[in-house]
Length: 342
Image (cartoon, rainbow, N blue to C red; front, side):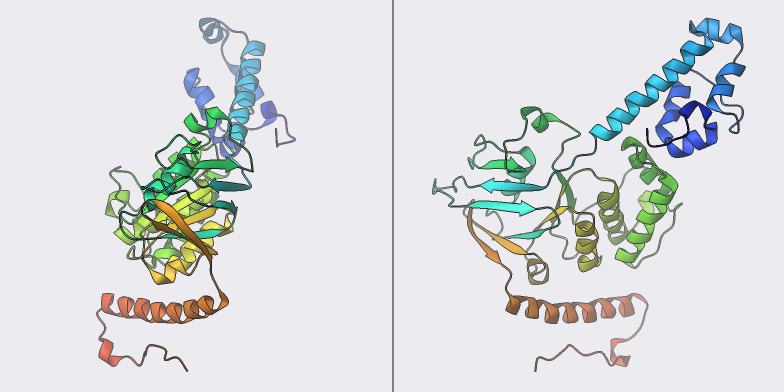
């Protein structure tokens, strides 16, 4: 355990705050919590003999049951921490059977953009990565994890889900608050300090969208931009998936640069399927897809990075114009101009 104070000596309040999943022990065993200031040991000692008799356990046995429950839950929490260092894509073939001459290693913290015409096979590449393909998909590609073939059970494991997906179209149907949504997700991940994590996620989401919402905003009342901003922040801080797929978010109503920086800052591999030149140049490399196959992998050059600076300046002007129009201002009253290259 991470806490030097024995679990049985923690107050129930401290126990629930530090290990939110511990509440399940009380719920499963039908144990009413009358005082949060009681220690776990004193609480169990105070339970009536008749109550314990109905449970078929004595005080010492219930304490051991509690400690065994906490140990098992902690083991599960550690198992859900899915950490990898890199993935490698070994080429297969395109729609015509032409061999992909490719061996591409992608490290954690890298941004790769996937470009190509609509229907060219961008989604198929992401599906191969998510499925950890082993020459058994239509493309015949193989995916290695940390240079090796991944264990077979990873392909069917919820805990070892490689890819979290963020798309342009996101709508919530749960009629709960933002706070309750994040809390539920954090509890399912057995995250510590849920209150602090919830506020951190909302703060980052508000920074991404520019449309401020709070803990008690209903999910169903969030705008499209707010919804996507919330999911980017939620994925960055709560998702165990080491790879994030961003699919066509050029018109998502959020700061794309900040979104990428947030995800990469959490040491995730970010794959962007896009037609947007600004997004395409944000990556370390571009994977060019044609006719179902990887046609080329292009490293972003220094000249392209200079182009990206100009595109970012233009994008910032467009963002300012958007905010002015939203606020009912007239563009003719502004002095903003698109940057002119020298």
